[in-house]
Figure 1 (cartoon, rainbow, N blue to C red):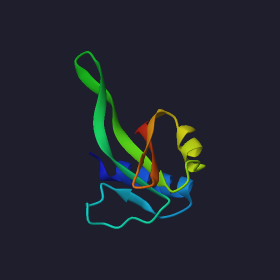
Figure 2: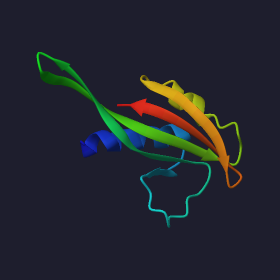
Figure 3: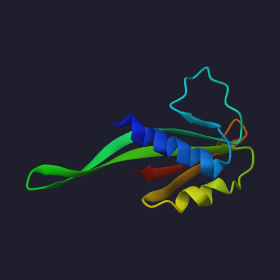
Length: 103
């Protein structure tokens, strides 16, 4: 994976959240501050033509975590091209909204 590509995604998510509380594959012992975004690489999608890879997009699994069920950053992320909303769940009293984003 291209590190520059991931740093672009990091910066974009920080801008949308309006905070630096954006964590890439954080270790289990890291105490996150809320609201925040946790994201990880979910895979790579390649498109082929004539047996050659010509477009490769990295899939990021983004989790918006907040005490409130209505965080504005969810809508902002969904305005990005190639993003889609997957699901919502509550764990430990925190709302988790899962978004898939290809970049």
